[in-house]
Length: 396
Image 1: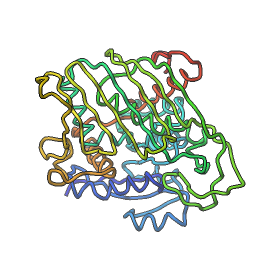
Image 2: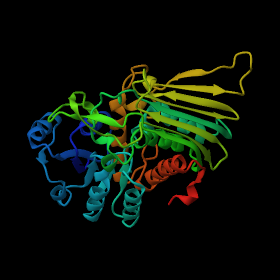
Image 3: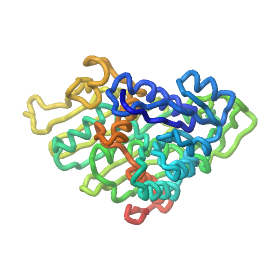
């Protein structure tokens, strides 16, 4: 029996469910060097907390995160709360000598993200992780391996978009639409993912952002009903008469230059009618290209420009082959596809490996790594505000 890792999870909503499921299932599919133990779930809604703990397998529940992060029994604090809470909770957990996993974006502001990075850098005892879970799609991990091995040669283009449509005028004013809680809108929620994915696949850094546009199309939203339900903080029912101000972006687009010479385009929106969760990236290089779309997440498209032109074309790779594709060997027979929830299970397996001093299947984003993504987020908003190019060297 492997040694255990006692986990405290802060937050019981959408990400709370995703993380809970991952902790439950990881030991069933991976031979883990550490066994994740679901010790304590923390939430503010006491009425909902007890049944959540019982349903998802948490041994204890508590409404005070400040008490829980100090408990000697806790090894890993997992933060899945709204963005504005990340810094305070992470700093407290690190101060208490805990490893910390945090949802993305790293924080609601660059200042908070910087404080988290600095605190993490000051301790050798504590490891940090950020839940950029799309790295754990086998197809995305394979794209990373192909680029790293030189299959694409010198990179020229990165083309990324994350389009959703749930944020229409009837969507209530939940925390994601309030700057004081979220920091930004679609930008931090969605662009953060594709910035991280671009940095991960290419192994390169963005050095300049330009041509940025940030737009708020819907400035007033209905206030949520007391006790109203809504997935991912996206309440669906609301008082028609009462409205509040939405002061975050509904969409952000920007252009980018990479250190290695590639150019990129990024687009994120919650108002792309007809798109549910369209997270797509394409990378073109001198020897070929790769293309990934999350709504068909088990597939990676690959083009080899060195093939005979007579038969050359985009190749559809089903990334479910055990022994050939990252993570696939832990799951089902070839062609038995994975889903969204498996990306979190894969990440738990990598976190447990890292905590045991072993190499994860693919690199894990740390606070320092996620801070680089946060700098790009900040640069894009500055570029939109000033309508000018912003070099990343100016954003620290």
